[in-house]
Length: 257
Image (tube, rainbow, N blue to C red; front, side, top):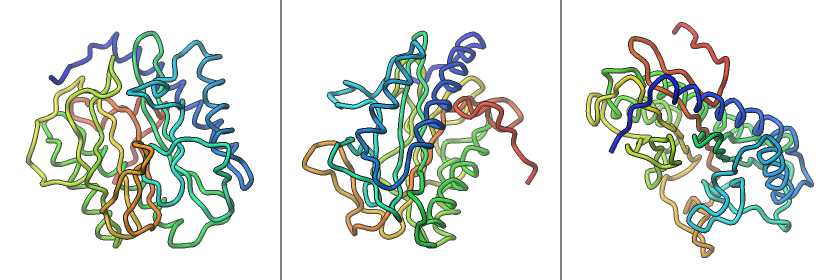
């Protein structure tokens, strides 16, 4: 069931989103060659707990960390490890969630590790563009298909592939709520959006083919061809007559096309 949030509830999610943005800003600043993904996870956990919030990923369906760290061909849900050391030229998706005063926020960004190859740099840039093009369609009266179609069109116009096995989602008191938010689809199709709907939109865009598989750990999802994948996500609220407010990107202002 899709839930509509009232202004007071949206304000709670706004506060959670602001905190999460601060956490990811600080963790991103620690990314460099020679750092382990476990160090990043431990730092994220410390920041969240110190702020009086709860790391929503930790223990979720058995997930063992507060941060997902997905490197290169790892699409999402990479488990931080002391043995996984970041190397120059890699990319790492930092995916994190917080619960503050009972309300959730979920966000992810892909961070460059030092200097990276031009084609990978372009992948990261286009993935972020896919998010904003899709998110701009999250206006009351539009459909979920409008979001997915915008993401897919931009990715494929740039010779990239949309991961199809994984989706964005509704969010609120629970991290995963209805509806599923696909990163591909047909404009004008699917659920019609209403003001007060809160969504986590998260394009996962691959340099190669879109097919993937789950690692033996039961969590990490990788591209089948071993090529890099980029991931970008924010929590937002649908509004009437204007693009959504991005709750996990405080102060973001939409530019005129």
